[in-house]
Amino acid sequence: MTISNKIRVGIIGAGNIGGVHAGEFSKLADECEITAIADINLSAAEEKAKKFGIANVLGSAEELIQRSDVDAVIIGVPNQFHAPIATQAIAAGKHVLLEKPMGISGDAARQIVKASQASDKVVMVAHQMRWESVPMQIKEQIDRGELGKIYSAKTGWFRRKGIPGWGTWFTQSNQSGGGPLIDIGVHMLDLALYLMGNPKPVSVYGATYAEFGPSRKGIGSWGTPDWNGTYDVEDLATALIKMEDGSTLSLEVSWAVHMDTDNSPFIHLMGSEGGASYRGASGKLLTEKFDRPFETELHKADNDEGERARLSRHFLACIREGKQPITTVMSGLTNNLVLDAIYESSRTGNEVKLDWNLN
Image (cartoon, rainbow, N blue to C red; front, side, top):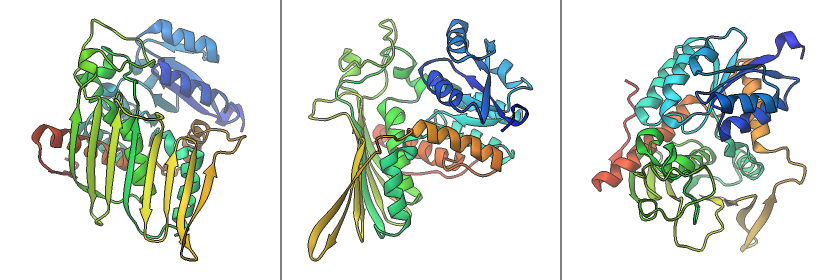
């Protein structure tokens, strides 16, 4: 690919996740060029620009979006800003790669869906776990029919001591939308629904708890605490999600909990012909042969390029080829609607039916 037809990328957000994207896309110099980076914390943007050789440093998302030398934007900012920045970028004719969750709420996600439907640009949600090696191996077997009908699944991610950035936007509901449910639970929800064949969720019963954060316990190593800030989100969530086709999904996640856990994400898929389990970097396919249990172990290859690399290349390929990404805006909306329903169910104590109205 020549310089003239490389995809020109701008990064909005120079925090930890912005740095991850800058690192990945800078490795794809034969396909793209990072032309600009923006952050209201200008010094952070300058630091990332120096590290990754980015020529233009800007102090606002608006400035970057209006640049003629940016074809696609990567949005890695606090959740409350996802919808405003994404819809502005789509309206300006930019392709968008948006960090999870797609919106801070179902209403915010609807705004992005409507903006995307009115555009011909690629809008993709950065759910990198779909691109991990073991889940991809499991999906290949599912697509071949090896599991038959997947009628139930269980997924979760228990962190024993992992509250991120206590007092910062991570732990303030008006900026993040919630705690571990919207932070890491959205990853497990998205991956489980994808592996199940994207059944349509119709109702949810859930509960959330905050037993650690308000007492400043369970603090993890991600982010820098702000002890003058607040904590008004959950630190554990649990839910049962029912699908239109009758299948069910159980979801449990925590930032902090007193239990024996290896802190690894997990999924168990139960199918009529076989099952699959995934935990961390390994997995199993399970079935019955010769009237006996039979299983096959799955592992990530030693030379695996990594899920972020595959995600980044998929985004660029979708732009070049004009195709829909695997993680579409509708998958992002589905996740947000389920998350909203879990929080509402916890507040009311009732089962909540999902509202699929886009208006």
